[in-house]
Image (cartoon, rainbow, N blue to C red; front, side, top):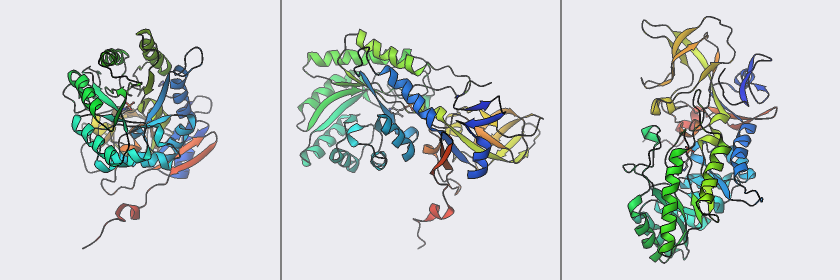
Length: 426
Ligand SMILES: *Cc1c(COP(=O)(O)O)cnc(C)c1O
């Protein structure tokens, strides 16, 4: 059996797939498909796994989690994390608005991203975000000007590009020299000195983020060593760093991956920082995927089985617009029938109805299914709904969350009218 999340899984006892204690079949029946299903307990468990490592033996806090909300920005999820005490990592003004709408505080947000607009910066400054993670001198200049016009001081970190290989998919690797992200390692000290001279900039931290779905600890340690050496060097030129943001990027098990245990990963990094002599740095983790990825599945109905000469297709009612990761990164998601009566199995490509050859969800999967069955696409909690679109004029899926025995709709299925309500015929 797949070593997938215990809170969303298969119960040998009653032969059913479930989320917490609710069968996925009953959810598909009640809420329709395609439908994202999340487990609140699974979210909480992943957060606790990080949080356990965030305290020293004497009980004092040494690190804090800022949830990278682009992984899944549903208000219910933000609200749960906010109540658990996370901060947030934002990449747009829209995400700041979501945090505020979900009951979170701007002062718990760090604002990342390579292309912050004038209005995003002004709004975030006025709201009082904890820190801007800055990626270039032009951005620094813009932030300084806006802060000056508002008579405010902008708290900033520089995002360092440590030039380490995260050994992950090229599209989700962000810490190499030729990526668009961060400030080139060799330019960092100079850029801090420039920032130090700016009247309305206040240097508070240093930041890096090397990529996503990283399954080893060593790239993180390499990046950490490079950033720690910069903190040391900054001290000698009179620039003090209060917080170290080590980004996100820890991978999850999509079915056969072996990421390090979250608590062990976090402890290893934090212990490494302390052993290197940096005992009073406030450390920030920015996990996205590892908090939500295995807390969600996407339910989809088998519409047709279409046998072919070289390939069989299992055509389902979810598509690349609902779950983009396979089309975009050739990502693997385990796919399981949750209610099949069929015992004959065949090998299928699981594909959606969208008019693109790239519209596939799984390739060469051995499945026992018939038309009308429901499949669960596993590990779909991160970069699933948040990357979804309306391509082919497809309403986006419903989202529900199981909390103990109660299933809450946390986003209604879009209606067709929703899709063209802003359009005008001339
Ligand atoms: C996307 C992103 C994260 C989260 O990455 P995960 O791989 O989901 O943990 C963290 N920080 C920044 C700046 C990001 O862009």
